[in-house]
Length: 165
Image (cartoon, rainbow, N blue to C red):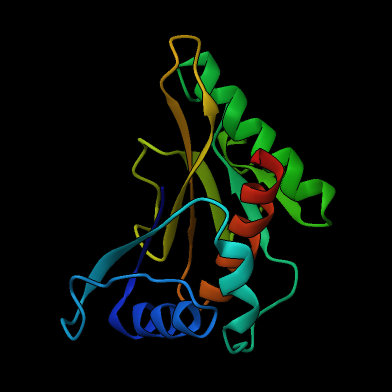
């Protein structure tokens, strides 16, 4: 499952976009202010994202990645692979483990981290399965974004999801 954490306003837009694509997504916290989590089946982001009205967002966000600091090698590799994939699609990727030495003054708009981490933003966020570990358990990567990058975040998640399929 793909989990999407978002504010009430953005959750409502995602549910409406999914409905127009014929995809059923339930919002257990509909009408409740604050952050809630939607889930959808893998492979569905590609149908939902084009139906969302575009906000004024930068087309190429700065993407930060925490990979060197992840102790689990499989998770570290998964995060590094996702960051590399997004870089191949023309995005700027900042190494957040470099301590700001290499990218002084640059700040990320989207952060790639292990799904179990607690990144600098907690919403909007998308947690995506990107494979399995050596024991057969799921490897999950989280994409989180600063305020105002909801649409961009889902576009990036769609790229990752398509690559993992």
